[in-house]
Length: 187
Ligand code: AMP
Image (cartoon, rainbow, N blue to C red; front, side, top):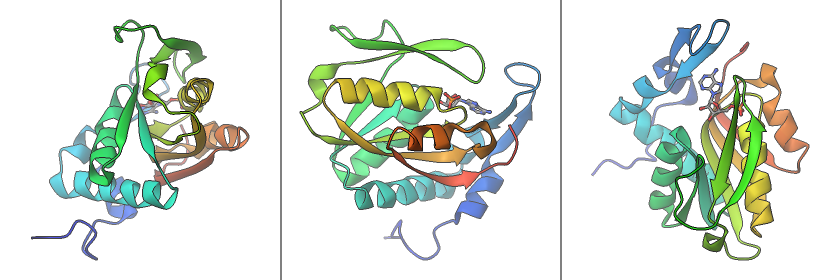
């Protein structure tokens, strides 16, 4: 059986080449970094999950939180690979129980995130995973919600960082170490 962590695993540079860039989506001026083509490539998806799982394990993850919707794809796969629980950070109105909720600003527009706080043990080290960090609004709101629920949040992992948009720096200012497999200059 092929080992996912074998030396043949695709490198971050090779993963970057699998990301499709769509100009002016969902609105003019946005360079949309589309991971559909990355996860559609079996080797690419497996390598992403393996790289992220290695980093989550090194960070001492006790649970993985993923942000709806693309954070679910990578976060859930990493959690299963490490045998950890997965905490979905959801869009509003999806969870059938009382929630903690927070409004936040996106690179384009605004949104709300919700979590079920009963899924988090006091002091549990939760590593956050999403496909991409841009302004950091989503990740900062997620960290605030998880912390409000009692989690210890000191690491966040992304497939893609857009460093020029400042999100990683914003998250670091909240005391959260940020690691991304790929960085794209510009927005
Ligand atoms: P932000 O809250 O600004 O860090 O935005 C991060 C979230 O919005 C992530 O969940 C991404 O999926 C999505 N997103 C923001 N900007 C882009 C972009 N340029 N390309 C693809 N996805 C993006």
